[in-house]
Image (cartoon, rainbow, N blue to C red; front, top):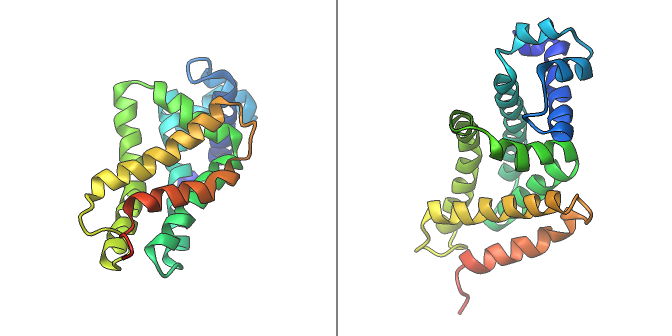
Length: 196
């Protein structure tokens, strides 16, 4: 399979760095090839074009990330703990890889309509993880029973996404991980049952 070959991964890692540093439109395939240490033509053995590199990179990174999140959240007993794990992992993943944070928060947003559709497809399983946490919380009587899962999903994902975007826009000058507990508490404040 093509994605077991080292050059495939070299190209993906190089693409993250090159696109973060030059922007999507300023990242020619030749620049990505040079950063990956491969000939320009080698890129086309693995990818159709630059757009394909971007989508594949996002699929690869997101796929690995979703697997880790499912694994870690499934080890937690209650939905509020699963939510905390989700926030911790979302922030940690992007805090630990500034180039990836720039690409996901800024460069992927400027892409064309077809590319955004592909990105939304990749994001779907992640949003399903959030839905499952919300539904678990309702079943466990931790979260309010009147919640609309799609609305809560948007609130959770939107909050995490905006926090990371703001951090990237401020040039990563503060510790994103310090915000985890407060984000968790604020989200729980909106969805937890009111204790009488």
